[in-house]
Each structure stands twice: as structure tokens, then as C-alpha cells.
Length: 199
Image (tube, rainbow, N blue to C red; front, side, top):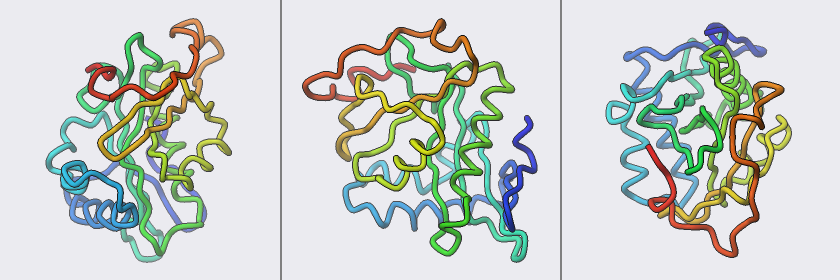
């Protein structure tokens, strides 16, 4: 996948190894610690990489070139894989989750580089569209997605145990819209996630 070795100033994005898992767990724990509304069971799952790493299509980490320390993580999930989140009818064929950057590395373009790694890898795998959910309180992430050209999709919003989740999509190919249902009206209230998400 072309995301291997993706570089931004002073940081390199690469595939994660099993040896990276303690650092990944620490970064996710730090990230979710700033969000008091995160459901406890999700926090426990998200911050324990051994529970989800083998179900990921790919796990990317950002590494500080000067210290060789992992400073960011993101998980790519293609359609029909265990970590992929999609509504029915399908709205995308790839997604990413668990995007987090260590506090000392924020503001350096690390999150953007990790997201770009997922977009590049999904495109290389033949996906037409990436779709994600981000929680209502994750405003910094929402601003990043908007700057990168993601489309806000209120019709895909869901209610999660931690609160409202906002839907976003990003077209990877010019004909992406031909492969998925057209956007519908935004519901008066987002449906409960377990009633809508499919494997």
C-alpha cells in the first residue's frame, strides 16, 4: 500500500508492528482521557490493542523522526471486515477508526498524515468511498475532516452509547456516487447505532 513511509516534516507514517502496541495503547488512553463522555466499555476496548488489532485491515502509526517514538495511530477497515462500520444500504466501502495523536505531537500535521495514509491505502485496495463516524464532542477531528474535503452526512448520523455520532464521507474515485445509495434526508433524531450498523 502506498501509505508505507508517508512523510510529513519530522514524522513518518508506517505500518504498525506488534512491538508498537504499548505505545498505541498509551496514545489512545491519553486521547480518550480528554473525552469524559466516552462510554467506559468502549474506552476499555479502544485502549487495548490486542482486542482489535488482528481484526484491522491495517494499523498505521506516526513515528517522530528525532526520537523514534510512536506519536499517533489510526486503524483502517475495509468493507466486510470486523472493524468496518457501515449503514444499510451501504454508504461506503472503507473506513477508519481510533485516530489519536500524542499531546506533544499535536499541531504538526500528524492526524492529517494518518488520515491520508488511510485514504491512500483504501484507494489502492479498490475502495470507492471512505465513511466514518466521529463523536459530537470531537470537534477538532470534525474540523480536520472538513478541511480535507470530507462531506458532512447528517443522514448517516447515529446515536452511540457515548452520544451522537456525526457521519462523514470522502469519495476516492470520480464514480463513487454510482456505487452507493444517494444521501437521504437527515432524521429528526439519529437512530440507535445497533439498529443500523451492519457487519
